[in-house]
Length: 123
Image 1: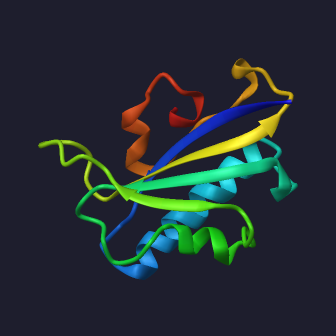
Image 2: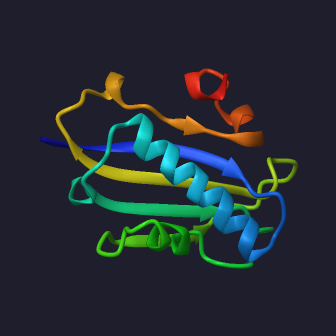
């Protein structure tokens, strides 16, 4: 087995606890589904970042809500690059897997599809 990174991003509709958690839950569930991650023991850790305009809550709370109780989680703020996508939540899962890099599915939802138009989930 190797440790692989799985990326994803989405946007929240507003800087509220409910909007951040709803967007993050949707993103995590889609990342887990598309990569067939059913055993949380396969997840080494998850890093969440948000753009500076999202500070109503920690996106990691959404992971705890869907059952990721023992997985190490960390939240951070993105660099405030002028003119970039607002209200964005990004995620990087480190997973133990036998999948090759080409078999990993990165997930971009909502307005975050614009970040990676080359990724199938962004179509």
